[in-house]
Length: 303
Image (tube, rainbow, N blue to C red; front, side, top):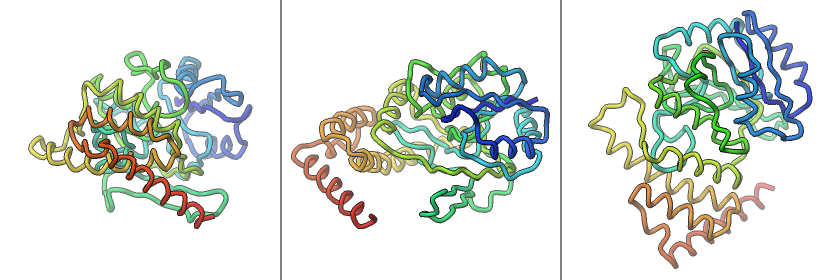
């Protein structure tokens, strides 16, 4: 009853992954592999293609570098998606999409995943947030794209936006489509997944992030519905102050040019109406080169 859709970087899926899915999913299923070994598709078009090919009423979009450690996880997904008002389910997400481009960790992260570095250079990281959370699901705004599930019928109302290219931001865009269509998104805590990649924040990632934010800025900020209205202004102030500093530094560390960082930061400041000192010359140039030099020194020390 579940169509598992994978955009594969190889012509064929790894046999270990296929065996793992077959051994653990626990329900009738199909694996729809979109061969993207030649990069002929964006992730947006690959997932739309996979959904069109699928034959079952439940959709699971998952990366090709994971392993499942929960037996019968397919039935868990079906149960979560049966709850009234559910749009998307995943295993990592957060409670706000502010006016500053940022990841799902920006506020109240909810996550249940294990990150493993196959090279062995980094220690395995098991993430479970909020600490001690006792329930099997938690409402969020944004979901991480490593694992996203939905009923197939909602894709008559939402669709991966193929006007975007590349492989970043699809998860945030589809999360916002779900929210704006009137659904709620959830992180689930009864499925254990091991992910063998923690991602790479390069210049392409940040450019994609800004493209997604330009699409949605007219409705931002968006908060998880349970957040008290009287707290939202203070939460937004703190989140945006922290995140505008983070994205500033991260774009520099991604070796983006001074002009590009300046232009993108100016756009962000226009959206928020705050922190104009970040783009006042010569302060901006000093800050840019301070972060850039420190980053290069740190990279040399780590190597």
